[in-house]
Image 1 (tube, each protein chain N blue to C red):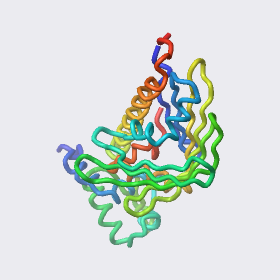
Image 2: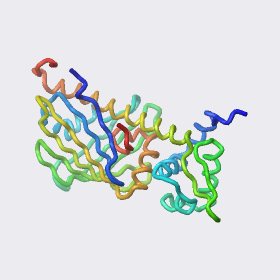
Image 3: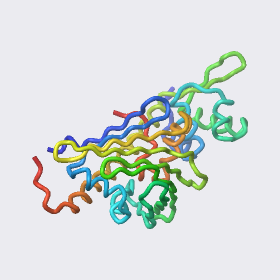
Length: 157
Length: 114
């Protein structure tokens, strides 16, 4: 039975984007896969053709994040951020911004992991500074493979 | 007369990040040139030039409101937004499908699927 893994994306209010996804693994594993650079580099890649040669994060409140993506054709972009709150194995709160190459406004991201049967329900709630930013991010994210970090989504279910 | 927007022209219009961002803004609703220029920190003439390209591509339309010419998404523009969303969604699904595999590898003793 795999229908439960279906992704949902929706906008909430003027500035939020909410993504949910079920995983077969328990919250401990899903939480770890969102923080361990070695694991992140295996999945947070977006469309085919992208790799993440740099994946650094200091998983504690105030700790820095730096992820760099590169495309086979040679182009790339990067993201920086900071952790605000970490609650094993249920919650990660961080802010991030993309450099394209100019920095995008901060995206505040709250990711929750809760037991769901034998697996995990992940709920990621992003908050952008204003509706224009949310809309512009949706559009500008495209070509850069920003999709890689599962942001910039508009209502769609 | 065939009034369907020419697909090549549409794709060329979408090749520019500012024009995609303008469409993103118009997805929120109708906007004047001044309103469109503001978030992008561009001059109104520069924005007007982008709007012209988008109009010629059939992605946006304008109406007359006194001295203003507010723009809104045309049907083709809405469809273009939908295509982006579908692409984003696919990319996201790809991420999480890969994560499923990563998780399975972390748990070699996981029970089989129901």
